[in-house]
Image 1 (cartoon, one colour):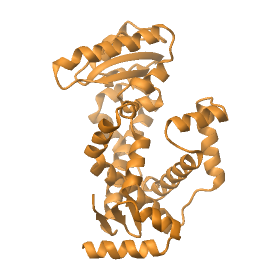
Image 2 (cartoon, rainbow, N blue to C red; image 1 turned 180 degrees about the horizontal axis):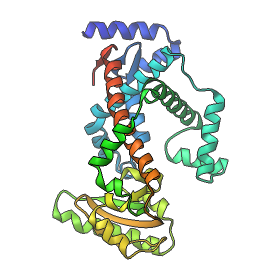
Image 3 (spheres, rainbow, N blue to C red; image 1 turned 180 degrees about the vertical axis):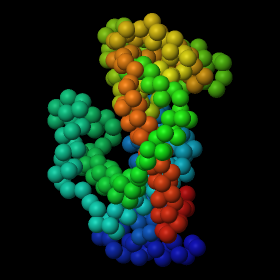
Image 4 (cartoon, one colour; image 1 turned 120 degrees about the vertical axis):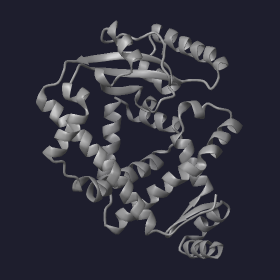
Length: 318
């Protein structure tokens, strides 16, 4: 098998310009995906780009340790990314420069950022503008191929919706909902770390009282995936909330920020946005349709990825 991977790499390198061949030869190949290679530096650059603010703030040796612990899992995701992009090329699916430009403009407008502020933000995230556009192009292409090969083939029947509502009484009731954002700190592994977490939360709460932006502090401190979007959890139904969240919002008005409170997962500071009245039957029906479609999509997407992997040549050499 090692001979096969070496042959594939040799063939791949022979197709590249001399300068590109030299740079790859100085790097370590960690995977071959059909006719493409993934290098160690590509893997680690991707991990660096997607790292949470907490990981980025670590010392270099600590950060490398975290990356090392997660490199195998992340490499699998990178392989799946390559396979989807390859499938899109096979199907003649691409993204135009205009689509990429529209994507960049949309993101800038969403966060009300000037050109210079946007470029500064990219720099902080470790991207050049060209690198960001390349990743955005890949996201557009993957969205297109997934829509064509998976999402567009999903059909949700009325019977499916009825069964889902029968098994999800809370959704069927369509209770009150809340627009919530949070700053979250993971529960420490031992009780000794609990005080340190509470002190950090108190520090963040003080910054909020001084007028700092909740969204910016969430991006900086929150250890939840929602940190990237300023801590927004979207619209959450009361019936879907943990009892600690229900207790917190019961005494809050839109715009209020809670005191830190614990759940089994960790420590939370939440901000209450809009409070939405219970839904009517039409809205409940549509929510159920989306939920069923989402479940079917997840199952079929996993099956599609599995099929792509089964027909591909993949060699991993971490």
